Image (cartoon, rainbow, N blue to C red; front, side, top):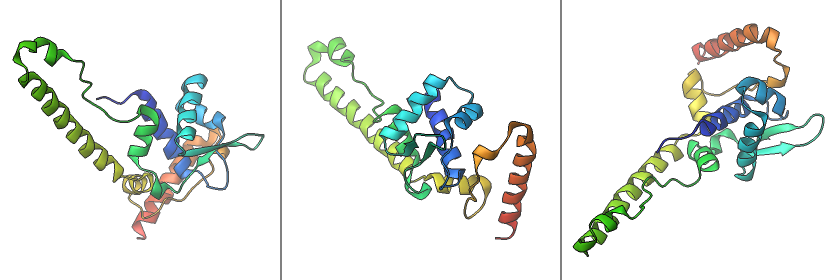
Length: 178
């Protein structure tokens, strides 16, 4: 199984919202500017995240998107399920039974064993992703104990480079003081 670019874009949206101040919605304009994807496609991704109850949407002049839950409660598996659905890596198209039809019941047993092996692998993969929260992922990336939220709506493209450098410096200084 290979996740699509939609998953990666959804993960970026979730990271933006995790680092966004919780009291201020992040505008769809800013999300689009940062991800640079098609408005329609990004809207579909954000709609999936809303339907999955990972983010909320607020209409209006000061509207935008916010996390629906604390970053410590949202896992990578939640984002996978929202964008790609339930994981099933072995589709079982019926070729084994077709190719080995004269070997019943062995071919049927083979199908069942194959399905079970992949179902077990899917569960292990899901269990692993369910252990990784957005909060922990970002804390590990930045090597800090907690993420200091910012307002991405206030980051102007002209000042973005200095903003990013300041953010990196602040995160680095915070990790030294711990």
